[in-house]
Image (cartoon, rainbow, N blue to C red; front, side):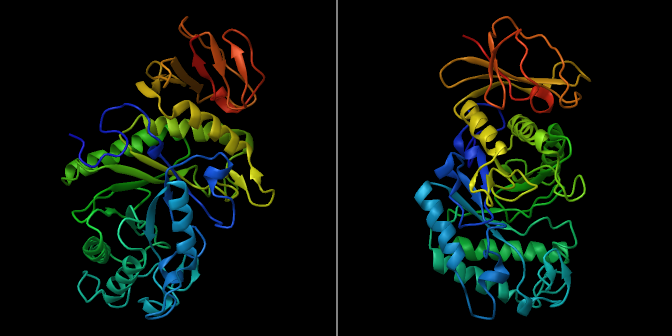
Length: 394
């Protein structure tokens, strides 16, 4: 039995809309579903003023404006919400001027009512989660995720004992309001687990998208080691490393191919939700341009392969065609019964191409720029690896 699985279990099967998650930076931009960027799970990190420090700027004072907007949009468009509990207010921080990822404001330090071993009242956390749940009520938050990338000191400068205590208190308070809410464990660029959480998380910022399979297998091994093997696993932040190449993101013509490769590779693991980072931030996945107010090339490619994937069933997971090969493929049965294959090569450099052979059942192939071609007919050079081809039987 799957228990709390929402898309797939530890076997592969039909790809549900719930697999597709997203981050939204500017809540004044059009909600993604209204411009053809379909998704079902929304993570609040990076969404304007939705951090703990912003929602709770001084003791007993709360500003819910942007969270209310985010929840309203989510409900209107049928999105499930993962509230990311993150970033200590300066007034509550154990180091109010400590250097953190968003300035010298102490946000990455633990609250000042927690000792290093996790003892103490932890009243600041309890008070905030009580106020949050009192504000939103039961059913509006599907998940609460604890912190962000705790293995990076500029994100978390406390101890594991303090993080475990915070997780315990968040879970206890939130579930006293809503027994169905699920707690996502602290996300990292590595792997973690814990008895107070319902979902294991990792972050898939990797240079080679196929290596998300290695990362996920490592997480699964750790989950099994610590008795967490029955829990769902989410990738709560996915795309290329944000500082690779240095603070620029990868070349624009490589981005659509990278993204589809990461979706395909992740679908070849037991991961149940993949939250891409981010809808409207330059140098990231960047499906929407805030400056131009239109869907980007990346967004158009995503909209295309979303229609290919949702409702399809994975029949063979993505992997090298032979051991050590740079040509990868995986097969699907589309929702209309059509047999399909995704195929790409990880070694060829844009705009070069490489030839390959496909089974004779496949008559046409499709590319991420929207092109459709007969098998055997050369396509114009497209993104690295000509990744977008969906080989389709007719």
